[in-house]
Length: 160
Image (cartoon, rainbow, N blue to C red; front, side, top):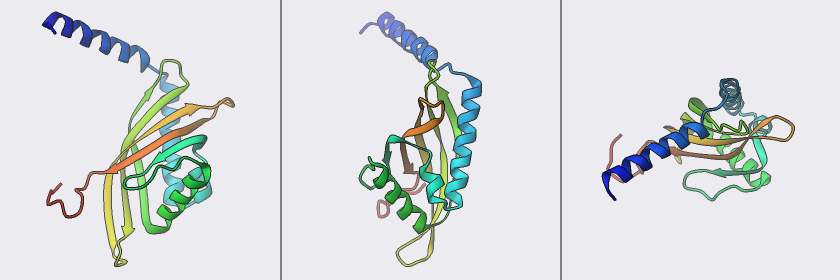
């Protein structure tokens, strides 16, 4: 590939990304607010409220576990998670809204303190990515949710 083709391709990709992700700042703020409320619900260990942020067809992709693809499996994943943590919170760092205004992604960082196998507190922190979809009734719901730790895998010898 010659340099001119590469520059043209990269320029067109940048323009396409800008056009597709130049959403409404009001929607961006609404999603930041919703995500903050969701974090507060999880922090309060309110299971019903926590799972209410998901769409009916949502998929949850927790680390080191199978995907949760039904309402029941999402609820079970959150119940097990909330039962094992003493604190959990997350904070939005970026929101990108599609130009259509009916889809967006939210990313950010999380912190959690849980009980390790010996019942001692163990802390984790990492990043997350959510895809939000505007529903037919105008409400925003999370359709896809994934997160992963910034900490090295135990026993890997890597330090972060």
